[in-house]
Length: 56
Image (tube, rainbow, N blue to C red; front, side, top):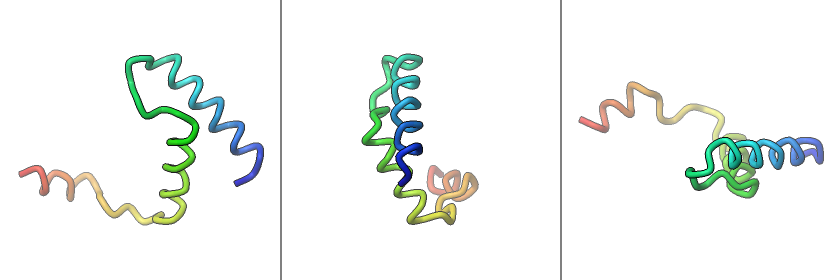
């Protein structure tokens, strides 16, 4: 990850924590882990229609 990208994620995490103080899981570390997961698995494995079928 580029250094600039890391700073953007850090700023995003701070903004999200400020705007949604009651929500957990918005740390820089978690957002960076999520970004890595999306990069490793770019294909949408769970689409909305598949999720709806699972809920039934």
